[in-house]
Length: 137
Image 1: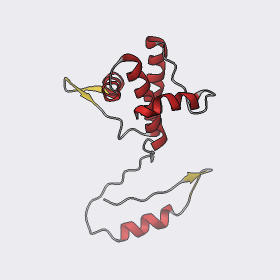
Image 2: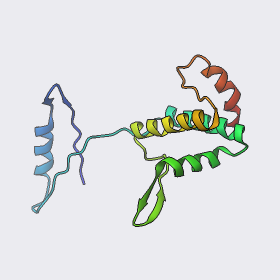
Image 3: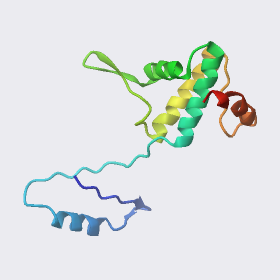
């Protein structure tokens, strides 16, 4: 399988035709299919660090481990039913948008169900939160 990356901006696509023609000219005779899908970005390192900081906070407050909390939230928010079986998806392959939604769900749950406020890095008291819980990372 080969990949051609391109960007469409302001209604224009650049270098796509030349790249596609180049790729097609290298193929052996036969039947092919072309799949075009929107490129997504995998979760960021900073998103992952924030998750584990939050998980450590919740774990410390409730008396569990951060891994316990990770497993709980993955089961709660990332599980799906496939042929009658429950499949729990991890966070490794989430896109940045999916990971943001996962973080948002945890933040809302912590606030509404546990009375724990989880700050974002832009919040004023994030630094003191970081100092308190980063030792558990």
